[in-house]
Image (tube, rainbow, N blue to C red; front, side, top):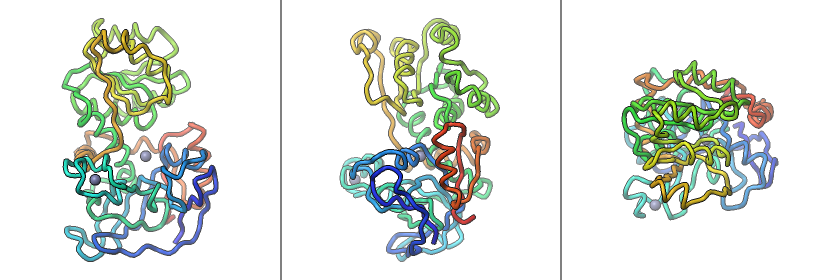
Length: 347
Ligand SMILES: [Zn+2]
Ligand SMILES: [Zn+2]
């Protein structure tokens, strides 16, 4: 089968190869991949020298995908050949540590492995999945939508499982990429009043967000952003801010725009940032929460949100390419001239 294989953890060194189709073992299923989403993480794996801890090479990359079950291994219950499914990124988790036992397998401390980094991922015609992490999708969810369930589940985890957001809260989201737009949609579905903030280079993305139902947007570097946020929040500052941009400036603006006793949720973060912890956080009783990946409950909610049309995903797709054109997809993805790029391993 065709598969996009990262041969070593070094930058580039990725090739479209012909590798054997996987076979389903105990409690595993083989899924024919119909759509696979290209994520910033895949582009980072491609462009950067990654340490051994992040990648176990050679490995098929891609961790966002959707398809149809073509083989079911022994011991699998509740799944049959032909089921349309999405799969969480987890492949192995211990099932016995404190985190696994309480539903947080994304925090498993015993050699957790994930699709597309340590175990073969979705940029291939077929993928082997752990049946414990496979979810059936209803007929009204397309394969393309299914392939965006992973980023949506991460946003559901941040908004509904990690933050303490409440209906009518004033909520500001920094970063209008796919994660920022999905986070804004989930916050809106939770009843919050939402403002999405981007830079002047991201005006196209802000326009797209408007089209997708996020009416209020602001441009970061154009006007006095803090003043605008104060106006939107009756002079108090935001109740909850989701930082989805990873930029130091955005984090600093978040600290200025949050109200006393407010909450900043980090879904992205700069590796280093000079902030005054005492003045900016302690004296104002501000909570900082972080959110990493997703868990099974996030996926269930994500699927229900799309099924009930509370979240729209299709407009996020800016490009569609077959796997033969994977290089173009990665170049487009690096240029930031796009939103979600869909790759079709089966043409
Ligand atoms: Zn991703
Ligand atoms: Zn565990």
